[in-house]
Image (tube, rainbow, N blue to C red; front, side, top):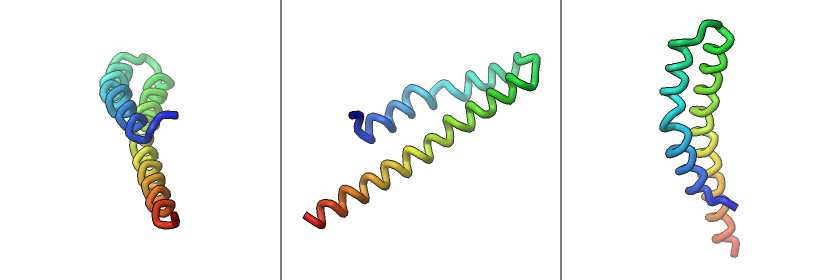
Length: 71
């Protein structure tokens, strides 16, 4: 099972580092609103994942601390 650090670093190093350039390129060359829209949704989703991952990391940290205090 991947650790929260691995998940966060994968997202940062293998998704965030290219998604904006790809979406910009699609918007520049797309001939229909559909593909421009898909590009915008994709960008939004990947960037939203940054916040979701941060929330998950924080929740896991709090659970770990609570478990340590209870033991």
